[in-house]
Length: 149
Image (cartoon, rainbow, N blue to C red; front, side, top):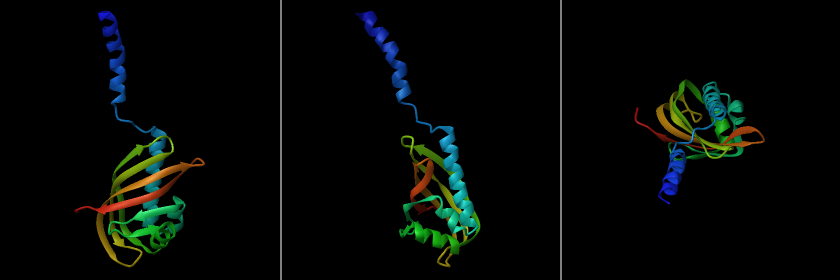
C-alpha cells in the first residue's frame, strides 16, 4: 500500500506543477494582437479614423481617462480630428481567455491635440478587450486611466 501511495504521488506531482504555470498565449495570437494595437496607434497618429474603425466591433465602447464614454462612431470621429506629434505604446501584455477572447494592456504616451481640440501631453495605462469572430479580431471595449509622467 505504501508503494502505491508513493507511486501515485510521483505521478501526480508533475501534474500539479503544470497546473500552476502561467498560461502563455499562442505566439501567433499574441503577435497578431500586438500588431493590431500598433496599427491602432499608428492610424490614430495619422488621424485615420477609418483605419481605427476597421479594428473595432460595431458594439465597441470606450471609457476614456477622464471617465467619459464613447461609441465606435464617436471614437472614429474623434480620431479623424485629432492631431498627434507623439503617440507610442509600451509595456504591452496579452492575456488570452480561451481561443477567441483576449485582454491587451499597456501604456500609451501622447502629445498633440485631441479630437475636441484640447492640447494633450499625457501618459495613460489602458486595457483593450478583443474578440475573434469569423476569423477576425475586433476590439469590443477599451478603458484607460491617467498615469503620472
